[in-house]
Length: 149
Image 1 (cartoon, rainbow, N blue to C red):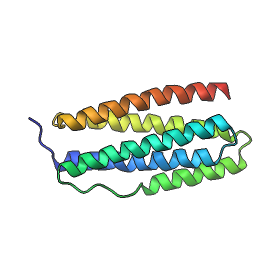
Image 2: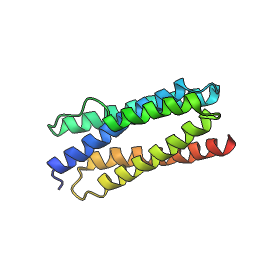
Image 3: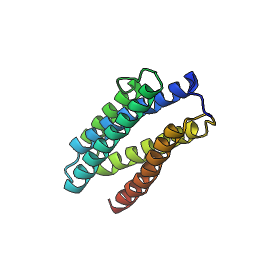
């Protein structure tokens, strides 16, 4: 049987923070592209990450912990960097896709780190595995989109 520890709570809260960063990052990307397809794609990813955050938030609360309410300082700095890059880059769509790839890779590492926790509750493991599978699929899609640029 699993035990919900402070370590698991911290790891889930870190994932929640990064999920909120990704949600805002995809929103920023959607605002910085003129490509209609990419705009719609980034908007869908932002909404998807909002849903991920909602699920993680509920899971943290289920075990009596307090979820983090906002993204990280690092995430805010990353979005500012995306805005600056978009301003000065000749091909800002490619630059944003590269940033998305980098972010998705880092996110997958975080998910793998938490999923390796042996004492995860079954409900938490199930949610994280589902989200991780979606992120892996998203990463493949973003790489394909980058190749088309």
